[in-house]
Length: 258
Image (cartoon, rainbow, N blue to C red; front, side, top):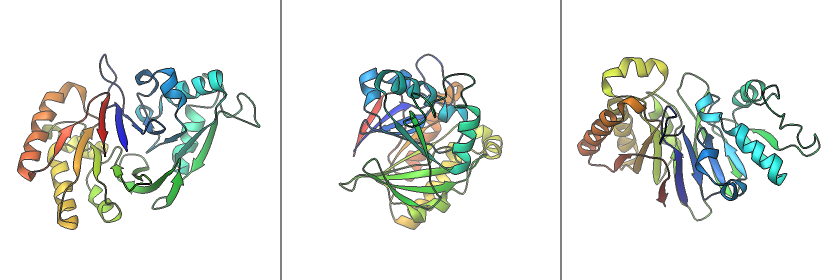
């Protein structure tokens, strides 16, 4: 399994893209900074998108991906998420007022986008992977995804989340954990209210993981608050040292092979 981080940041600026992951070139998890990261031939390989929640920085490039798939290849894309996530995205982002309605283009019989609801704690075969949706705590209804390939390689991507993510640990056993740190420890109270993590909160959650599982997988941090990146990097490095674990910041176009 090859995991490529297309976007690792909270804000889009030159050199930084919104959060999005690509698995083996065919499966996308969140669609923030997606199309600007990939060539047209690379986009053409994509079959499926998993959405953790409806926020714009995780869904924006559904529009541009659908445009390229619909206009250039007449290809259908399956988009999975919670029913509430899909309803909001359909009504607010893909309703056809700002751009083409890709639920009807190129035809109602064969639309570009097909929405598929996924239930919390359900396990589903998607695009050749075993996908488990696990509820996480955020400011909007959200899930993380454990994705397991046919040869047993697995990752768990939390999406946006805050304290009590450790409630997920009993349900997952990943070789790679991709999670978030949106700001430094000095903003802990605000981050907790907004549904995010700081390094100190992440340490607490990882400590619970180790207590339950007896080990820690490799951890990659994304959804990085751009103005505080150096501070976050230093604090995450301190957490890694204290836990004696492999924890580091993700970055655009980073590739991890499992």
